[in-house]
Amino acid sequence: MEKSSHYFARGNTAHGAHFLYKSAFDGLNKIFVLTGPQGTGKSTVIRSLADSLLDKSQHVQCFHSPLRPDELDGIILTEWKVGIIDGRVCEGISDNEAGDIDFIHFGEALDNSLILPEHSRTIEDLRSKLISAYSRAYETFLTALRIHDEWEKYFIESMDFVKADQIAQDLIQELYTGHESNTPTVGRHLFFGAATPKGAFDFIQSLTAQLKRRIFIKGRPGSGKSTLLKKLAAAAEKKGIEVQVFHCGFDPNSLDMLIFPKLRTAIFDSTAPHEYFPDRDGDETLDMYTLAMTPGTDEAYAAEIAAIKERYSTKMKEATALLAEAEAIDSQIKAYYVAATNFSIVEELQLQLQSELNELTGSMQLSK
Image 1 (tube, rainbow, N blue to C red):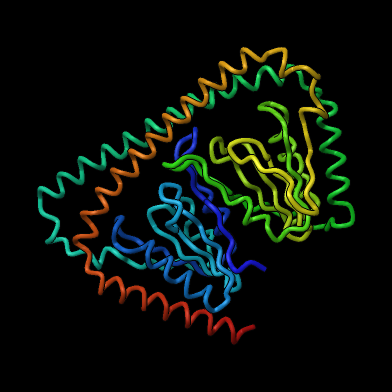
Image 2: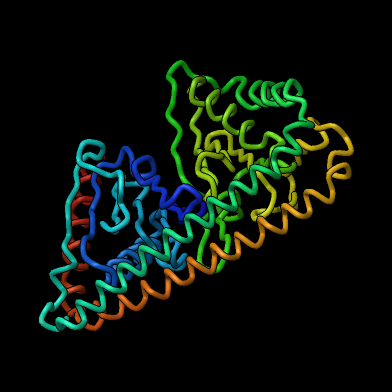
């Protein structure tokens, strides 16, 4: 088994900032929320704890930042059902869902006397610029989504919905027969990728590496890929089959992948910007275009589709550039806090967190 799993649980989407932490961190025994502004060492501490746990061969779920995918927003110690998360991103997590929440205040490491009045004014100014860059990015993604809807129309009109439904029913039959239970399940909602300042980024390959079977859905916009996944997810929950439900990082109302851990199977939308091809035993293709669409649709609307594709691509590049602008502004804000942070206090907070974890996992070990 892989020692770590990598996800996103928030995204910069056509519908604004979208958070899936409520579902991703559901059912944990304990959550540590690290509070404090950017630059006070939270992500560094989370990464350092993850590395030390991995060195001890503990399984760690890593939740990456869509602004800087090499940084972590949070982790889950899988075996102990303990989560650690940056308080600035944990929207949706509250006391009533989690077993127990502890706050660790990284703001304590901040020497406020080092943030001069003129720095505060600059930070305020940068914050409003950051909000503006984000909202322009979201508006631009939304414009791109509207263009994508135009693209879909050409294919939706050529779609055989009876055939598409039959494909879903056949898959439900084939995947779930013999695995049903009487207790319905609730899917766990995550992102496998995100729109980042460097473009689309995903963890599909690492998330599916250990699985026996991978079904690559091919097709066009509007050829029923997300609808198929929604039908499979709903049926899995009803039939009591554990399912991880991965939303599209561009349009979170759409689904892009399902993983069935017990069936060791994944089925995912394998088209741009996360286009992959079968490359090992257990890989197969499901082409919705050839199976459920009027032949010749591509050719019939080639000129119109090419023009839409061009407009879509331009908007996506604009939105990505705006995310890069947001990242640069965020880095400027962060620099003021880094300069005013006493990192020996950050180290003490890390040791405090480490000892609480040791105590917690020790007492859980005893109760096993």
